[in-house]
Length: 136
Image (tube, rainbow, N blue to C red; front, side, top):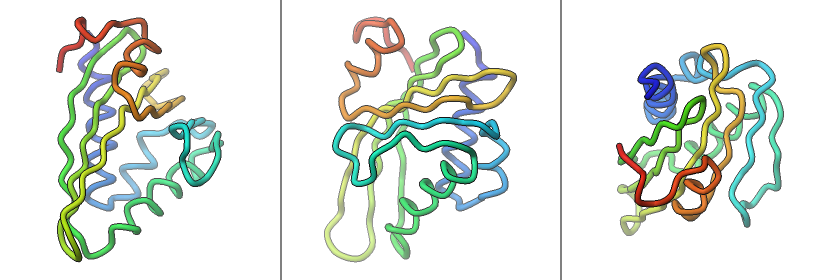
């Protein structure tokens, strides 16, 4: 298990919650590629750090003035980290919850590829793990 990879992904998600764009930029390779989940409002892929971080910022800004908690379960798979994320939004209006799993590919200490899935089992299949092999 590459704890360094897990920590890199964890730090990037914490930076997003804290609105720390500088730390978020540091986590991603300049030529990063991200794939949103099927049915995402904007079709991907998103290419390049500026575009990817911009997508994260727009998502976070859509929850402006609301409190966002994120529960995360990390699964390490060689050079990839699967993260089951559950966001809870509180503030204006009713509490909302959203869940997705991101699969982050790490190379040279940076996130190079990020793929997102609505279903955790599908994400685990992508990294060659079954649901029963997951650990946090």
